[in-house]
Image (cartoon, rainbow, N blue to C red):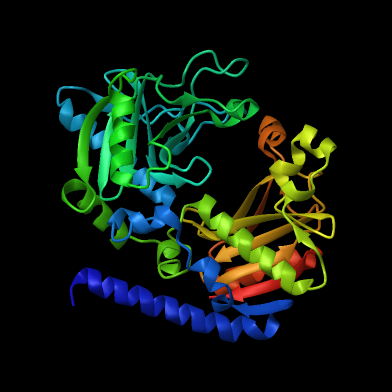
Length: 417
């Protein structure tokens, strides 16, 4: 058996052991409904158009955050190779608004090239059900924003477009596809959104259309490199990253929905949670918000933004958070974001983790955090933490669930993988 095969087998054995340990440790203590994942196979097995086209691509096995770090490093290396006489340096971290020094990963840009500040953003090709088109969306681009910053926080913008088995590295012209979203732009920055042709399902054709829009006609972007993800420098970086996998990577290796983007996973888990609600309340009437929204709610925009389904005229909002491993703190944690209190009647929380999905009804106050302007624009957040250096998932999950229950949050259901 080769090293990679041995690693994969070891990960499967590790996950199987984790699952058995969890079952013996927790099943007797589960409250609320306890359901097998097979009951929701019609939801969990629906990978969607986006996930299916990346099947077999080694980069798709890496979490979005770690993939972004890898692609940034790769883009920097490519830029250095193309300009061997240039001086490329790490960014100066700078100072936070509270006067403390930023850490390296909090710098306002990614690297410097001959004194120019370079920002790098990556995004993968995705299918937009709303637009009925393939698109790529690069986010959190800190362009000038009235009342927030007079100038961009960088001089050059490098974009890495990730499509199945290919990376397209592009120097952006700071114009084509640039878009804003009202108040949210002041917090999250601008986006670059480029789409293929509407109702064209061929992703290869969509990539060609997107590149044409960016680099010809009105677009003045420059495509500086195209690389395969399964060969050369990308394959070497990916292989090294997979071999140095952390707890989180190993834990989620064979978990349903693990390789989906967070947004699509949220949609699937929301559907699952709604079905759980129907099991808990079989005599109730359910509807989607658009079917019963009032004129007042339509004027405020609150209803559409922050309610996922309605049970007997009661507005239910579902938020999911993935159990994540903080490498420096050696701690498991879970974050729920975009919570807009006042726009719903019940807040349901779904903890998505290597052993299942754990659904609670929040008490409306426990662990809720605000963050100034960001809260007013995108809502509050809720962060739950296990103990430091508590590396085993069952124990960490038990601690987090116990915190919720002790605070008065009701455990509604447990769906085990």
